Image (tube, rainbow, N blue to C red):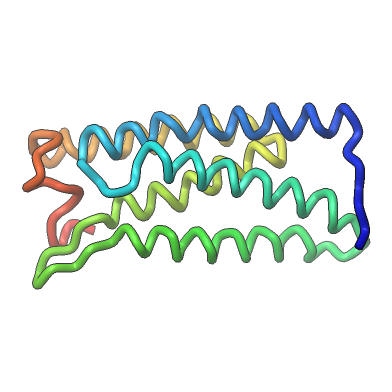
Length: 159
């Protein structure tokens, strides 16, 4: 078994990246939990962001060869795995479908974590802000009140 020691700088970079990933995903999870009564929220969104950040960091540490596809393979696997988590947020009952916006927000939250790991902080911040704007604005444009269980996430045919 190969054991790698992280330098103090790398360890600090990882801890800061995890913290930033958490802080950027937390408002999105809070919005989903507070305004849509989604089943995923304050725990899932930050966990997805933090884990995406750590997986990318691991890829950066482990795949340092000359193959340009190594990092893209990490991102492809990450995107696919997060898609499965998001799929679990979608609920179909008869003709109603709920959770599609939450599933999409979970997916973009993974991109927040990956962006932080690659040190694309402006992109991570923009994704977090746009997630919040899109989720909040969609309720306003639809003219629906926030928060009622009858408006759990979306209604059939919207997305």
